[in-house]
Length: 261
Image 1 (spheres, one colour):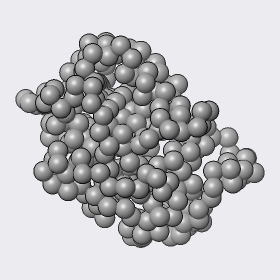
Image 2 (cartoon, one colour):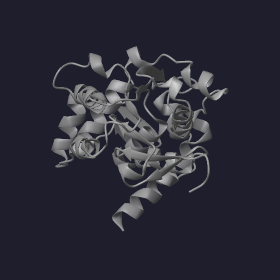
Image 3 (cartoon, rainbow, N blue to C red):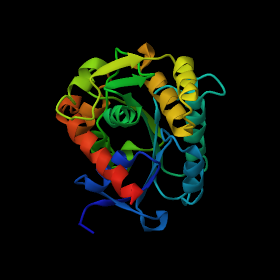
C-alpha cells in the first residue's frame, strides 16, 4: 500500500464513489473493516439491506465518515429519504469518531439514471429539470481524504457538501452528446407517475424505484443552494459536470460490465 494513503472500508453501493476512493491521492480501498483506518458509510445507497449488514461489521472504534442526502432528516416518515436518514443515525450510533457529510446529488447519480432510465434517446426521471449543484465523486473522495488525515475536522461535526454550481438536467445530458447510447432529451416524471410507468412497463426494480425517490429528493428546489464547504476544504472550487460526466458514463459502464462478469 502506498505511503500516506488511508485505507478505506466503503460500505455502500455507489460503485463510482468506491472507485473514486480507491483512486484518490490520499486514500485506497480495502475489502474488510479490519484492514481499514477509516470507514465510509454511504447512507445515500439504494441497497439499504446490504448497507445494514456492512455497518454491523464495523468496529465502533473505527473512525467513520457518514454520507447522507441533504436534509434527509426532514423527509416524511415512510419515504425512502427518511429511510436514508435512519441509515445515517444507525451508522452514527455507538461510533466514537464520526463526521457527517450531507451531500448534494452526485453527477454520477445522474449517470446511473441515464444508463438505466433512457428509452429511445429519452431519459425518463424524477429529477427536476432545474437540476442541482451536482457533486463530483472524485471531489467527495478528496474531501474524505482531508477528513481522514485531520481528526480535528471530524469530532462529530456535520457539513453540507455540494458541487460548485447548479446545472439543469437538459444541460447536463447535453454533455453526453458524443456517446451513442446516452439520452438526447429529458422527460420529467413526478414520483407517482414514474412508479406507475415502471409498473405499466412490467419493470420490478426496487433499485429503480429507490433511485427515483433519491433523485426527486435531491433535486428539489429546497436543496439547490451551493455550499462553500468543499472549496474551503480543498482550496479550490469543485469540478463542474462538464469536467467529468462523460468519463463517469464510461466508468459506470465498465463497472457494470465487470459486475456482470
